[in-house]
Image 1 (cartoon, rainbow, N blue to C red):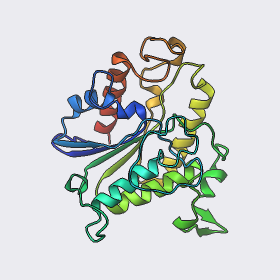
Image 2 (cartoon, rainbow, N blue to C red; image 1 turned 30 degrees about the vertical axis):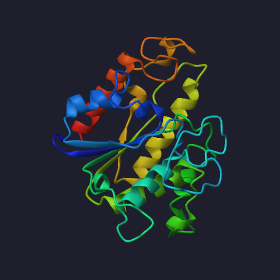
Image 3 (cartoon, rainbow, N blue to C red; image 1 turned 90 degrees about the horizontal axis):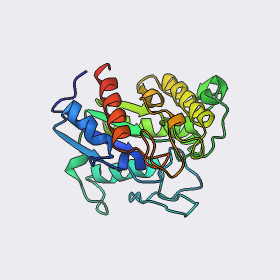
Length: 249
């Protein structure tokens, strides 16, 4: 599917927050796809699931060494969209940039250090049904990936009923940063959740061409500048890979 001259939204962590600079995959993606307009709300350090009880304020910021990650979660990026689209609440300011999108790309999960659930069908299904009935969205657990992804999807789908929604798996990293086994686990879990939701596209960025075996902790490797974040080569590989993936939707 072509998204040339379409509107695109990017959500995610620091790898996406690098934007359109030399080390930003979004720039290489845009060069290939040629959208008419895009918004990037990604924030450095953002997690896919909630780390602790979160009070959303619609102002997602880098948490730094603050381990409560109160604002630095994907659902606060979604909250920012919600407040920008709300024209009825006098406390919020309408942002016309958020009115509509044709494509939404969510790239996160690298900063989630653990997941409560095992990577199996039963664990994923527990966030969708209970005792043979559909689990109310209000009962979904945002501290788990299946719960958080279900909530993120539901909110975005209500905001943008016609948009194509994609979740991108984390990319490989230097072993000292994120082990191959942990990233593979996250990739498999995200794929399972996307298959359960069905109305989303899973983009397997784990296979984008970045290989952790050629990367080094706090040193520039083949595609990562510090073992975690892309250098120009890695950003180009990732951006072009995701562009090719959306063309196949």
